[in-house]
Length: 309
Image 1: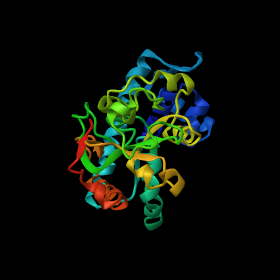
Image 2 (image 1 turned 135 degrees about the vertical axis):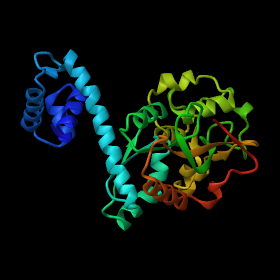
Image 3 (image 1 turned 45 degrees about the vertical axis):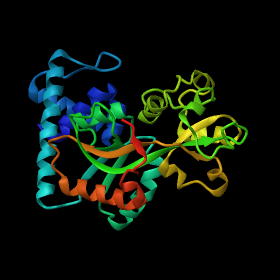
Image 4 (image 1 turned 30 degrees about the vertical axis):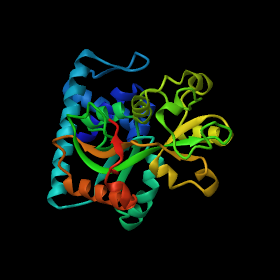
């Protein structure tokens, strides 16, 4: 029995398909199938029912899969503890990042970090808050960059920076002549909002006491901030963007940006890990890299800010 065989078993349990599991493990399908079969022969049980499509674990297989997951988690903790003792930045490190953070933060530090440390193997996955919490608990990812919200009490959080919300207003909109946007200004607006489950959207709805924005949802489902910005640029409605996004805009686009009137809605961006996470050297390195990459003014909240959770 090897750790590699256990990894193949977990991949097959996840994808329920030999080809997909093999592709995920970066091996050929015959190799994965053979290794799983050898483990079954060693244990004297069938882990998977190959007659079913998709492939399903047997009753005995479910127990094997559960134990395999725990063994691999313990093995990973052992490797991580060894790397930490060496103060090493090597080894694979998987970082989850919110989709409303990644496009604006990652380009600011990640390319340079890879250039300065070519042997570092940091992998980034975009995911929503709920998916990130689950991935952290199941050790699918090592750490997550997300906005502080309720329900993160079982994670260890380190503040990275604070980020204001801005309105992005089309030139034909009644709000365009205003120098700032009040919450009351938004009640009758056509708003482009992300779908529920995005904390960026949920925090705005909570702060502004906004309606469900059913008009925009009927018009465009599963949109992104960047898509909604293009809608606004073509003279339709209002959307909202995070502060780091403003730094990427050209002069023409900046003309559409409007700050909120006081108090200014602001989100706290944090780095999250599980309480038993051991690779502190890598975590500190990433946190410092991110803090150095954002404007210094964003490292502390403004006195006029209202932190939205």
